[in-house]
Length: 285
Ligand SMILES: [Zn+2]
Image 1 (cartoon, rainbow, N blue to C red):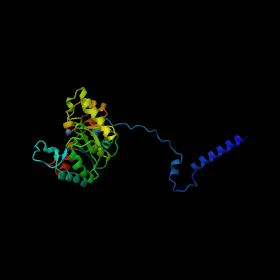
Image 2: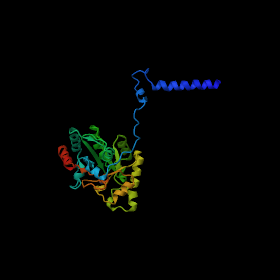
Image 3: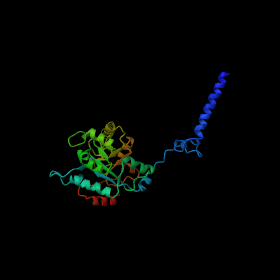
Image 4: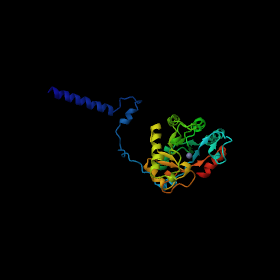
């Protein structure tokens, strides 16, 4: 008898407890959490993975300008004519970044580009993706401060053989770029042409570098830049199979069946003023 009474009391207390939290008339208006507790009038649809865009849909989208840099440093007398387009003097780089900022461009990262292309997520009104290839130390010492001046973020494509070598970034510097919110991707182990890979090369040039970069950043390596911008059909499934979601070439046409692994970029040479760079961006994308 005693037990039954106890149970009845316990049940009524429990019930009252529920009731008092469900009907909130006595709660102060400022308690916004009470709004959440009110019963829903409609049942929300269960979360469904959004349908990814087809290749044709991706190609039909407005292209986002992607810029490609290699070295940000002043010229030396040893720089050959063929090397010069890959070198942007520090003051020119600053001017180019200033031109982007003045024109209202906002940098985006590969994750955002992917979500825009595949899932239709929105981007800033004037998006630009800035990328750096080859792991050069000046990207850290000279380009990074210029990027930071405008709160710009960039993507760095690392060839892992060069990590820690003189003139190149160290693992710690790459880790720091990642911590600062920049994107770290792969640029192979030692910059061999992807078109020439045979079986074991996919391990040496793609799998191992991806793993090493993941050890540095703690994140999967999902983005890749082709050495020399060169790619072929055979490379596309090989990259996909190894977890590469997007790969960056240079200015050739995107592949009609796999635009995500043939994203176009333009090289910005040191001979371009900020204004002429903006013009080149508008012409190419
Ligand atoms: Zn390269």
